[in-house]
Image (cartoon, rainbow, N blue to C red; front, side, top):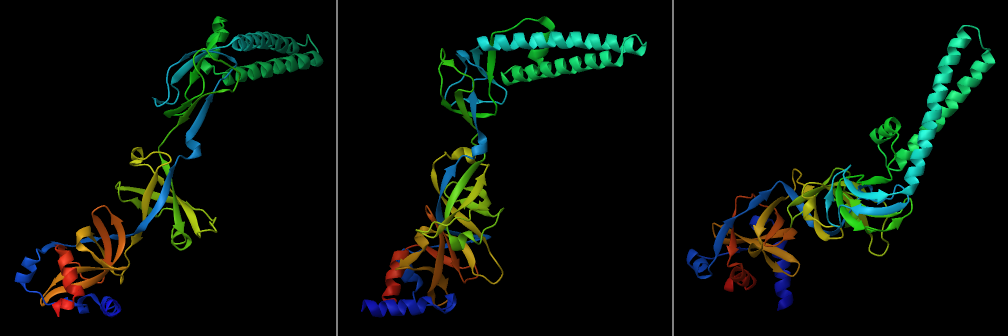
Length: 365
């Protein structure tokens, strides 16, 4: 008996929507079944079934703040979880090495200044024919060498964390400092703190890790057939969160065990709702093309299932029509379905279980 019912059901579902099974039910019967009616909500785009995606932080948005010189950490202004801005002072380092670097720079700056004066003097003497060309070339060479050494030591101070203004002030006032500021290289959130106040560090030892969690990546696991239909710029959605992302690239590396590949999408707007490492459901957006079946949003209670088949029930002049649908996306209490219908039909949203029972009983006959 069950096999006969299954064959009858399969034949009915293969028909056009309005040539499908019509249940000859009266208004009184429908009232007794407590059937309530609603309307379809057309969708401009269809959504695929859901696929898993992992939220990933792009590697370009993480920076490790290191000690510009060896020394003692005397102050740390932020801790894990705090947000910082690019250029913000986030700590202080006391460094004897910095004093040596400043002393070397001041010596080279003095020598460069003296060689500049000597060059100017010899240029005048050479012009008047008092000194030889050889003497003039030696003075020129000494000047260029002193300038190169000064610029080299100036760059060393910059690498040690001193700014251009601080170096100019050092040259003018000849007053050295033994501490330097630790500055945030990017805006973001402190994700890790590797050192404490009072720690002695060597040059380039990590102190903080800063990450900027916007935008984020979604690494979507897709069957190869679906992945091949995507291209950069395509839209994907996170239905449960109401967010959208744009495809960046399709990785040409296949998982031989399950024949899936990864698609990377970027999300900026609403990224604060996501956390790195989170697993989310993502649906691909499928543009509706001319001649294809339309897609609609319906309440979950409006869809009846029999095995792998799904149907909805619509008002009909002779009772209730049983319309086969394809479920594209399931999200909470709403489904997105595809059906060969006009879209202005009135469908049952409550009492569907009773209609399904009547339908599978072939109208009670």
